[in-house]
Image (cartoon, rainbow, N blue to C red):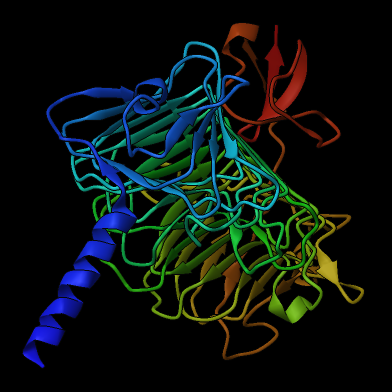
Length: 459
């Protein structure tokens, strides 16, 4: 019986080794796909059209490098996974493409798991193929890449996903287009430090799952900065715009900033779940209303924190066309939407948030405080004809409507500053501007605009 058991163990080990396929020797070599096509047993073959077919799994060991060369076309077969414990040098001068080998194939993509293995992705299109990255001492940089039509086989966390905590990750100037799941994400227990800047997110989560297009767990010492992106939904009823969460109650000392983003046509705009400290500033959110049941969502911004330990600062946001403006479903998070009484105070906030046509079932809801904390919300422009206390009260739900709820302190509202500050056109790209009709614009030409609550003359 022992002999049979030993035989089964050896057979299982052999099967595992066979499944792993080729493994590089870890002696500092740089492997291109052309080089791999000349090594027996790698599963990489050069095709008549000049592309490279990857028909079997292989691993690049720690210390080695996998390199994409200019104009490479890599076609991955069904179920194939490429594992990198070493570095990924995916930075062709002009372009390279990684895709599936035929319309029925669902590759598992790239798993960049080396604890010390860094990844540089630049000028690459990943089509039907995802990237999983993770390693405590490693980081990923993605610049001018396209992630499109990800099949969901590499990870449930997104086309670009992080499966271990790591810092100094940068994703900029990239395109995330019509991926089956969300675009960027990580697991509930592995926060990462990341900057996501100047990217386009377009119609991701095409299978309509309950995931935002950007879906990040925050915590630990890691900073998350999401800035200057366009996050356009496909009017899906379950997929939101941007989500920050801390559902495991992780301790955190990092900074989380969501600013200068244009977020439209999602189920909701921005949501925070759990203990999350965040600065939400100068975002434009329009028509994030595609939740079919208003009781389940459809907010421009939703702050959900039953632990009552979040600190949320909001300034200069434009919120239009949601089923709700801002909702606080439960708990007592510390929320500062505007606190103008003492300009010298540490918690001073000019507000400058604007609410336009947010509501459902014929009722306008600019701010719905279903929690128990007092919310400061001074210096804002509410969706009423005249900014009087009586009128504003009609678009806010709080202690005045239910004594068990927290109070919203909303007076005084935004008060127009008639002074005009002059700036040069070269200095105009420091946030969002609004014309005198209240329409947001990112880069105004010469003229008078509203910026940070002041009239600005751009010359």
